[in-house]
Length: 68
Image 1: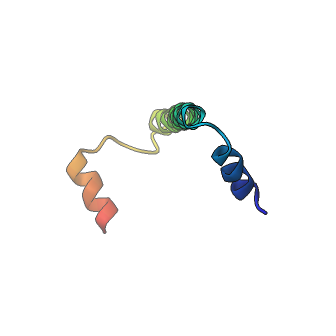
Image 2: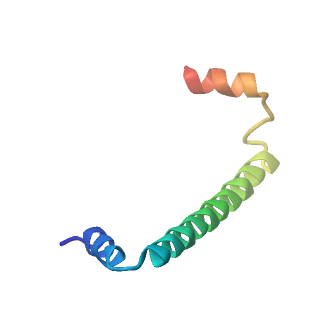
Image 3: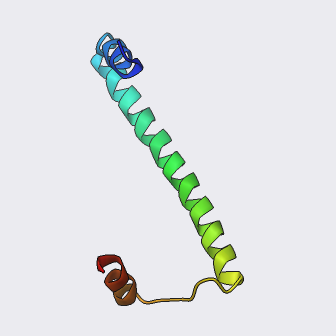
């Protein structure tokens, strides 16, 4: 059995209230990790910008580049 399946089975043994609390805790932790990833990405982007490796662009220009 995988860790994921084992975790789901363990969660099934919790009361409904405990499952809701677990879900809320996981959502908060995921949000915190995403914020930490974003902080790193912003720092890297600022460093690249400061070194002249990138330049400011508008949303339209960025989307056009993404789509091509």
